Image (cartoon, rainbow, N blue to C red; front, side, top):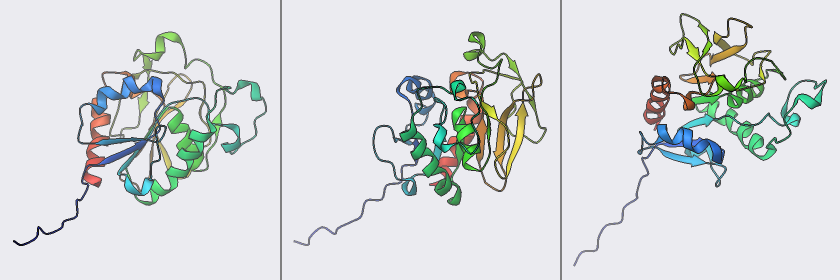
Length: 222
């Protein structure tokens, strides 16, 4: 009887790398559930090799640990105390390789700030008016968008006390708050899809197109 020929199993499931706080899982799960064909690789739960993934999601969280900032900190008291340097170290280490591979990247809130710092930018370390209770889960903060922006929202939610100051290399502003010019959305030049948003699309019902765009690019990358 002839022996069965051996074969190599090829994993074709697209993989998304992220570091997701436990309390944020409920928000993102609503979007992940629409794409069961994508494997979510959460570095908080185990080792994730950026060389084996097809996209990177940088999510919200506490302030970036001071040792990673590229600027003076005149008043350390404005920084949050519950920083996560282990997470920051992993995320900073993933940005460069992800960019060099041309992976799609979606950076949200703290993730946008981390992306900006990774590209040589700086932050406004404490700002007023963007973390009011009514703004957190309601899309009531007005935006102005550049006409060239693919994703444009008239109003968004808001929950942050830091914001971009000096832009990182090759970042382009796509949207801003008209009352104080706080940057709310950027893209990276010369990359297929690297988008950073200061608002929280995972908490709203109007942002499906943004996530669908990101997920479709991730799947095509595989």
